[in-house]
Image 1 (cartoon, protein in one colour):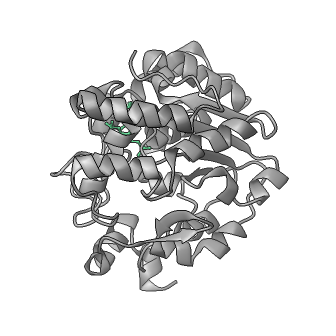
Image 2 (cartoon, rainbow, N blue to C red; image 1 turned 60 degrees about the vertical axis):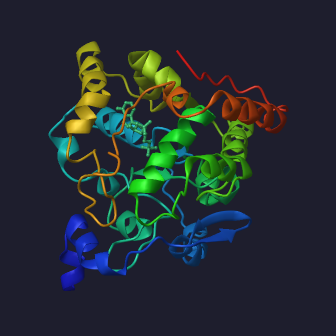
Length: 309
Ligand code: A3P
């Protein structure tokens, strides 16, 4: 085994840090993705999951990490220690991620992990490897209302020094509305999975529901995974996956991704974890413009998003 393969995930990132920059976006079938991901996309598209693998799909900043942690705990009967065995991207590999070596790509990590695996993706429905559908893998999709999703992504793009510079807030709103951010249009993303949910047996969840009633949503995930855990274990999982607990958890809070990749002095990965934070950023004029555009883009579907609880 080479020296690089023995590096821990965090050490590999530290070693590669001099080659980090804000990477450009290059489209795959019209979807802007970071150039390393685009260059590796053919290998990702050819990935063949095991039928026991689970896919957690989200638009960036919709509650991916939260859901990954819930699922890992559900699969390990709420055992907090086992779920601290490794940082979340090792426990639940990010399918398409590809960064400068020696950082292992998502596919590298998947090769080293035995099924059933908890696989994360931000790919829109049409870019998900067809093997997931051919093998009838379970898929959990988590959607978050557009305005809070945008605010969260704006902060993330400031602190994640590998994503394109978000620039000022005003311009960022328009980039979001035009679908120019990494992983493309939020509108198409949430609609793409929504339209396929019945045919593909996708469990479609909302961040706002998870905030409003975490226990009910944890139980929904549990049933979808054909698990039956005791009430005590469910209560423990709800507690362990509260925002406060996850913010303190070094295996979930992304402090394992060192500066200069994630600069959490700019904005914490576990930033606020709230519904309705958008009201602190959108002016009334921006909100009205955003809503008008939203109505046009979402008029053909009725996805019950909530922008406040
Ligand atoms: P904010 O930036 O609004 O705080 P992702 O994991 O998809 O990147 O999403 C990150 C967003 O989910 C961040 O939102 C983060 O704070 C929030 N989040 C992470 N864990 C959470 C939890 N346990 N409860 C509520 N929100 C959580």
